[in-house]
Image 1: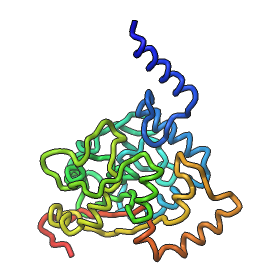
Image 2: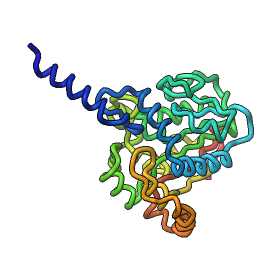
Image 3: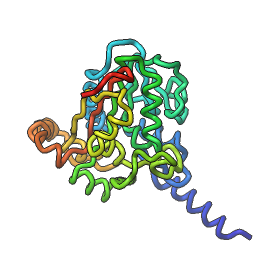
Image 4: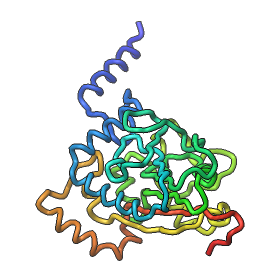
Length: 279
């Protein structure tokens, strides 16, 4: 009799009955699609989280190049559609909220077909980020843009992520690694939250030399106060409803401290001819 297997099955059953699905990384027995379903459910019941992301989406809209072909990569919960109705949403994990399933490393798009590629919390989940950026170069038209909202690793956010977030932060990672992935991937929710900070801040000069056809247009740190206290999609919201207007005012006042306190970044890269020098 396989008592250990029976015990494991029982514990898995108990876990699935007593804990809600995670909207961040899969719990034991939770499928990748269920993570995205849980994220969609959290979106519907967390008004401050919706407000935060809608502000992010307005910033993203302002960064887009003119055109009609906007493709979101890794948008499996479908939040961006409300702010950008004509965006084509893709994800590695098929869900009812996407227009097509696709691997970000091998996009089913013709060369120079996209006006804009949009990523919201996706780049740090890609174990070969340089290969993805080259794929973005292939699919973007000249003048097209890659717009990304990602974690920023400041002294404050690093401490908070380490204590209260399931995704790892490894600032020692070699993001330009040629002979393998930057981190070991066990599925689409594996990650290293430090990847965007390394690429676009700490090693930005090297990135320009490796992929000169992607010119940095915007590189903005964001989210000091409201985002971490909102609880995101899974944590407790520490800002009561009556205090939210004041919280947003404090957020504005705290912006000069973003270098040390920010939790997020907005980065926009523009596709340039290969032989065009970048500043």
